Amino acid sequence: MTITNLTPRQQLSAGRLPLRLANLFAGLTLYALAMAMLIRAQLGVDPWDVLHLGLANHVPLSLGAIVILVGALVLLAWIPLKQWPGLGTIANTLYLGLALDFFLRFLPAIDGLGWQVLAVAAAILVNGLGGALYIGSHLGPGPRDGLMTGLHLRTGQSIRLIRTVLELSVLGLGWVLGGPVGVGTVAYALLIGPATQLFFRFTIVRLPQRA
Image (cartoon, rainbow, N blue to C red):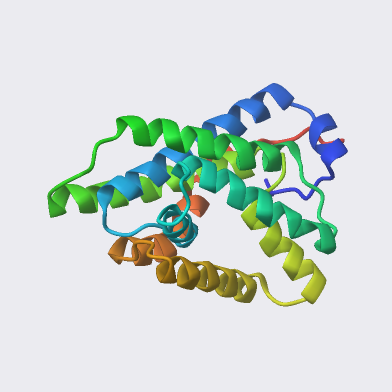
């Protein structure tokens, strides 16, 4: 089974839509939960959340609202890249921030180094599962992943190089704005790829052959 690159119309007509929608929103919910766990663990967050939290130091909005606004701004960058958003792209932009605010309302801060390390490890696994579920639903990439693939297609540069440049750029900007960088940031950068790959074999929805 492979990940597809479908147009928005093909995404909706490819078959098994109820299952794919369920996987999409389950994946985004787990993704938001993992984001909240990393924040509450207080050992550093993923590079994009370093930016989000850095902005939260200067903008009087909830963190979820900032996630939505940043996602919408990233989508604007898709226009010159001639990228088309799918249903999963729109859901990622809007739902992720709402779910993040929900989890942050109920998850307490995690104290004690042992519990913090455990929370970071659990968050990376939950994030990997969530990412694999929403990517495997074949309903379009999130704004940030779509920016990466769009730049790859337009420039011809490798995905690895473009992702590295993007992640380091938002990490640096977020750090300058006061976002939290720590061992959790490094652990996330090193382990999120293998964690997502681990769950792909179980989460990619097999589409009918005609798709």
